[in-house]
Image (cartoon, rainbow, N blue to C red; front, side):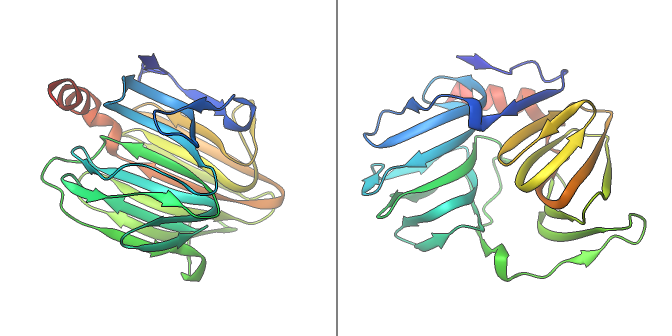
Length: 230
């Protein structure tokens, strides 16, 4: 299966307009944003757990990264409410589910194979720092290594956030609205911009909060190869 598989192209997906697609586990549905592969896939998705639903215990051979958007996600490591940012590195194992239901934004098979760093953050209780060069913008760093950088970007009303996406970038709207190019991105809209581009997002009148990842799109071919070999 291939969805938004041309990484040389800018992609915008208004996820709230997509139908939910059933997963192999009852009560767990998905909205695919990009995907290369079948059940084992390099994939970016919005995933919904119905109350009482769960996945069987499994190993994330290629790693898993997610943000809890609504509700409470649960596994044997704890309860993770909305605002949680989680990185389960390659070879990590868990049994995910949700007693009361939840929605998460999740990325699979996009880690470096040697990565073994677990991250579990509750971002609603983290501060942010101002970007001196961009008025009205503050940033909450979530993760950074030599391969990628992940942050929450907070935009004041009508503020503009500019990112030189030399190695590509992705953006998910967590709260508010932004305009990027000619596109209006609302809550849970997702954008992927290719290598050697620039991202320019202007907030609406109520401001916005964005999840932004940069630097990782130079390794897509290796990520696909690892999926195909799994």
